[in-house]
Length: 281
Image (tube, rainbow, N blue to C red; front, top):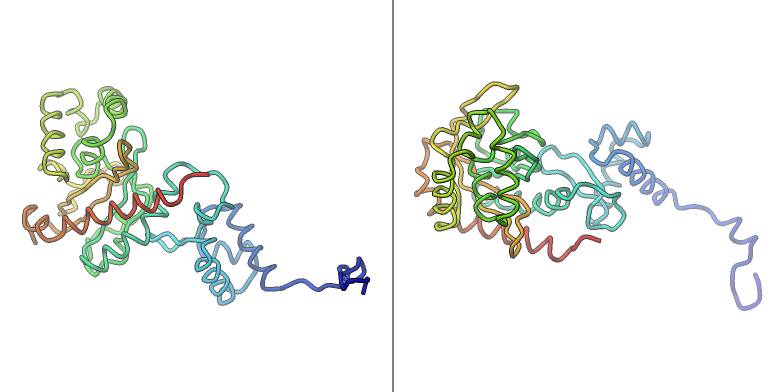
């Protein structure tokens, strides 16, 4: 050993590697290549056994390097860890929302979705529907990426009512060019302004009576549900909107809001606060 107790080149050369750390880094490399991956995907990429992978992923998740999507249990490198590759701006919102929507579902039992803007429609980025004890009888409702229209849905109205005027006008300009029946209110400014003013006045949005849940595979569907929704309002910016869904024959909107609106608002505030604590790098 060199004078002073330091390590010399020969000592460094003979030093062994830490196998567990090597395998953890393998997993992170696999997730860098495939930002959203199932356990099986990571197994195929790393050839690490699934029981070992579960231990590695659990360790990485507890350390804040990996998070798990609520909708399907798939893994991703955490946006908040500082090592994730650049992703679209809504990935952070979905990651922040996942544990909060899970806790909300555990409390109220009915499920929630996180919806974000996606051009001429909104898009589901996270959902607690797999965690709810209530079956909503629609497997596709858990799919991340499912589109929902702006003007008749509770989530769309919640977003439009509270987003900046310039952003709202840009969205409506796009919708005015649409020939879809669900977008025709964009060409009825008096009616739409009245709906959005009512939404702002009561602080939450509901579905239009004509809204049946959107489309699946290009076919209109009636999901038999009702919803209340609030925006993820961060001062003058809106990150998205979240809802709580229930079977519409179980409660009126007034009954459900009286029981659960405060819980929904608290969840929205918690998501926004999480995003503030972890600003984009």
